[in-house]
Amino acid sequence: MDSCCSSSSSRYLHPSRSLDGWFAQPDYDNIKFAEYLNGFMREYQSTLLQPKLRYTVLKEADIREHQLQCMTEVCSKLCVSRSSAIILLRHCNWNVSMLFDKWFEEEDDVRNKLGLFRKVPLVDRSAGSFTCEICFETCDAGGDLSISSNFCGHFYCIACWATYVSESISNDGVGCLSLKCPHPGCGAAVGEDLILSVLVTKLNGDADKAKHSQYLLRSYVEDSKGKRKWCPSPGCDYVVDFVGGYGTCDVSCLCSYRFCSNCPEVTVR
Image (tube, rainbow, N blue to C red; front, side, top):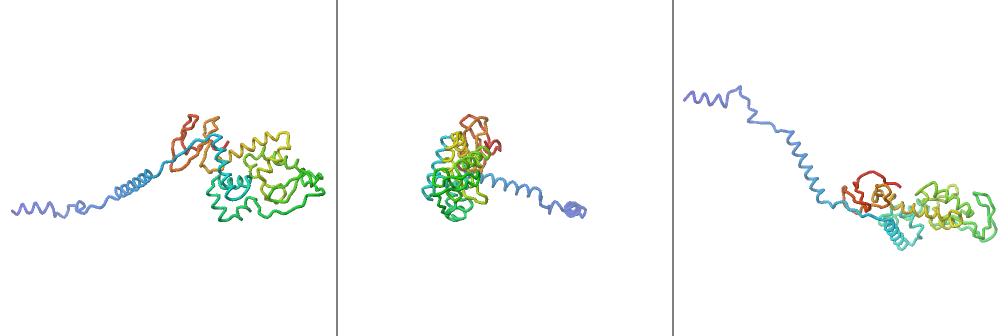
């Protein structure tokens, strides 16, 4: 009996035996991994609940129709000209809702920033003559040889205006849509109406008008902050418009080219 007790005691109570098995320490590595795994699964499950990124492919006619719809809505609701609507829409990445929010919150700030000045100096050019400050030729102020921006009172001869506009179209790319009055220190906007009217007087005016029209189309894509992208396939002129959702997706263009929506390739033409 004593030997049995002695054997039992030595098995459970012998001082040389470790008690770690009885009071095991937690395995922190496993705990951290479990926490990481739980967090990963929660994030993964939340992404499954989000709507997938969606897109539509636009042809040139589609883009011009969308632009016209945007311009018509802005002209109607803000009572501004088409030229002003273009300038405003480009400022807001062709996002009509964003434009309305900014306009109704801070119209004066938007006008001043873009050169759409409300108070235009009244300059009487109905009679006499004036000297163009670019070519220094004397012009008939009462005729059709002088013109100014709609947002300032700085007059220049038609020939100088045409050269100024044409050089911007040739050298500035899409930047020609942000043209300002050439008078030093004047930030008045030069709109589409003035640009097209002076190009009529140039021999290559039709070519410049066509380029200007293409830059306007490009701005719908390149001002969109990634919402719209050119198809990266060489020679393809289609545009992918991402219309909602999250994450990335595989895009299949109408030209049959496939690419990832997050691919950084060709975004500027």
